[in-house]
Image 1 (cartoon, one colour):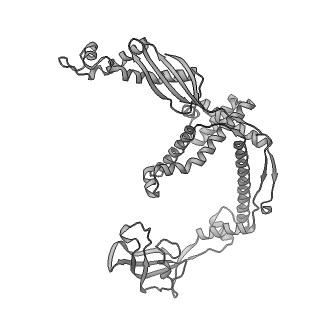
Image 2 (image 1 turned 30 degrees about the vertical axis):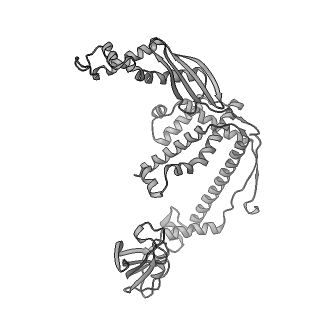
Image 3 (image 1 turned 90 degrees about the vertical axis):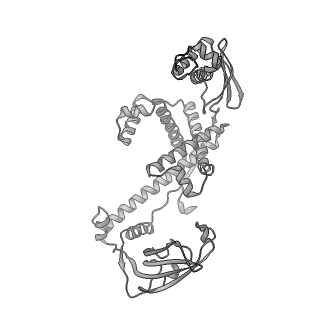
Length: 433
């Protein structure tokens, strides 16, 4: 097997002409025959016992050609790509242009390759950094959320239901004086104002008292999920059994002890503030990095093959599916619930995929321009970190993650660090915008 010609036929596209010699092709035919001989039936012979010459006479000389070519071409194409020193980004399109026992096989493989990339002015990029100030109001809001999470429901007596209450009631719905499926419940719990029911329903419970029986008159929305109810006026016969409201705990030292590891409310506030300050700092740092990434991409030139974007979208969709499966769902079910088809779903990943492909290409070019490298010690440290994160042995991690792949990731991280370390960052007060 040998590479006959490597021809650049278009931007990022090469045609490789590959020759598989006659002897190699014949050996492949022999291999295929031996693999399939036991299942071949020829009249006059027991199954699997017919001589090969008889099989070829009956079914034609080329009976084993297709399987032999399929057995040969992956290795032939892979070797040719390596010999041509191409970095391909998609599976090659393969066409067999000649096949015979006498001449062997000629294959033309069309390959999409990684684009030529240029990137400039990636050092000394000027960006502004704005860190949000942490205010007392923000801490108060955090405490209020903690209050809500630790509230308890208490029974209400002596007053009517109001917005924000949780009511327990019976209901049965009628359209054209006929009860409809799914329109009945006993002692159903509903928080008024939650928007759980169709518009106009919850507001009509407000002002009602325990034990009261009443009608709720509504009209189903035109886009309601049940076809037979769309746009129809309905009457719900209701009876109110219970009214409950949230009782918030007092914000004091006892509250701090109950919800945290701190003994006083002041200590809890200080901890919340410290976490908010750290979060604000991280958000500002992330925003700076995003600005730097955008600047690097803007300073890059490359004709990026569409297949690179599609490959990245494929990976993102696959990762999303894996996460769904870990939660007991699959992608097909998710799409049904959201009403999206696969094309629409893939489009949601496209902008992020484009940005990831572009910055990766730019950073890889910076690695090349700066002659960045990674030592064995650095690689070992990365493997150890991964092993710790995944709670696995380092040897196991090395089986799943090729060292060369990890090295490339490490070098890309070094490139982004170089961009960040050489950037000119000026602080800007958030309220000055």
